[in-house]
Length: 352
View 1 (cartoon, one colour):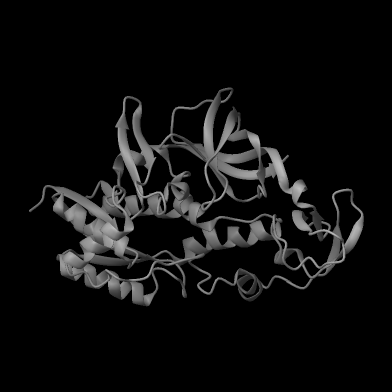
View 2: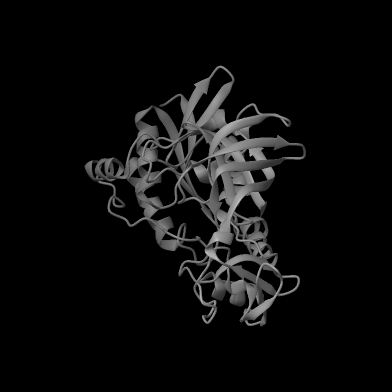
């Protein structure tokens, strides 16, 4: 019997399955767990639960399904809806990690005598003189450190990311060698509780939001240049659906739901040199008043760009960019790095 106990979070996909396999090879006594989060989901639905149970049976480890639907609705889905109502474009995956998954699963593990939580995230951990550091995953394409910026720094020593040093092909090959049924399973995409990707229909059906509340489309000086079918149809940087006739392409610069307005302009007006952050979380020893040269990702799929980070009181910060950045979007996460190390980040409140 192994003398180390760990909880392994299983999504029903190949990454978490191989993470379980690697933890077992490292001598951990494992218990598998899946969080049931939403009635219809692109991850952790009934088929995923069946796949996770099959993996656990193959590895000979116990398996439990936990019902977190109410907490997920309250802490993630309702916030997602409120952010859209406020004219922001939310990132529910990072919020789920921040407010629900890691804390809840570590608490569940403690009930079983397990002090360690393992997941299938493509990220890495390293010990430094100042404590545990969170690093990018070795596979740049699959790196998921962006979604982990908001977890508590005190949790890092208790986490394991076993696939963080592998690329996707290596993960699938390992699953095939060990006869895991999920070896060829397709990766899930988009927002988990909007499995068809149509978030506008979700906002209508789930929250009853009026997607057809027409209003004015104005330029950056406030002049009316047209009308829109509802602010919930738009996000910063969007070009599609703005109509023509202006002589040059228009892009969404900002949303003003209070006045039911969409502010549009030229592509040049999309670029900004600074952004303000709120709700910041730092995984390194950083203090208000300090400034640091960093690279920052302003969306998950965006390239990390150079910036100067200025830390402010009350979990706020400011980013200044030597090269103007396009379509910096309120509600998205700005995640800061120094080299491979994730320093932390915050939620974009506005762009200048």
